[in-house]
Image (cartoon, rainbow, N blue to C red; front, side, top):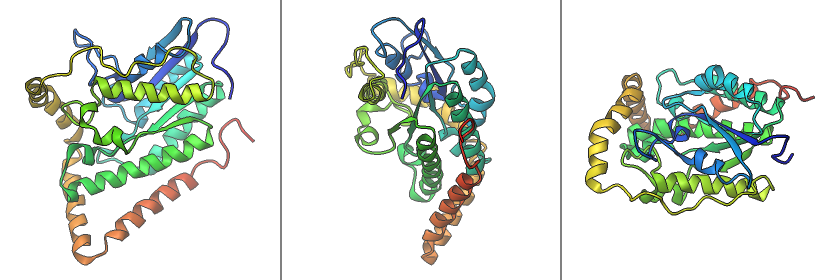
Length: 288
């Protein structure tokens, strides 16, 4: 893997959704910071150029069609692509389409010689504490996305962060009131883990991000106030088109559970992932 050096400053571009935009890590005046900005500060001792193209609510289609072209124009040395949760929250979810889009994004970054950062993420049903019949379909979708991300990360020699389970998910102190976005502590944890991953490969030479928050943790009343206003609206806007389908999926889940055939749903999801990966080109673009 090539070092993160060229003539002029190192350039890091972040692609994705609200997680990478920095939601949950406010720095005043309605601005977000987030893990990517924290990571950028420790990539090198010298000046680092950083552009965050992530936009709240983005799906894989948005990353491919809107964010990627802008990123390629910057000819970055390092590109992070962390996306997919919003795809699982839509009634249009199609793991085959997700796989195709991510394959094209990863390939385009690789063709320019950029080092690629990726991550798998926890499923939103678990994070929101939904009842099992509602949570299981979302978990199945997120597992499918994570499997695709794992496979394509290996295919394109990406540096991949496994962030879908463990204390990262269970430690509530790391998460904001909405349970879908990290708080400042969580964003710092993500930045630190990505920095460790890059440093292991000799690709991060600057100081590691601090794990200690810069700002006081929000009080319980502040968190509840945010969740009852902006947070609830955020979730509602992203789940409105899913709700009717999710209720149908939950009913299907309950029927299979009653019949003792729940394993069929998992097998169906696994088959869809296998078909999605098999449907990609035999070799990454630009490679023999």
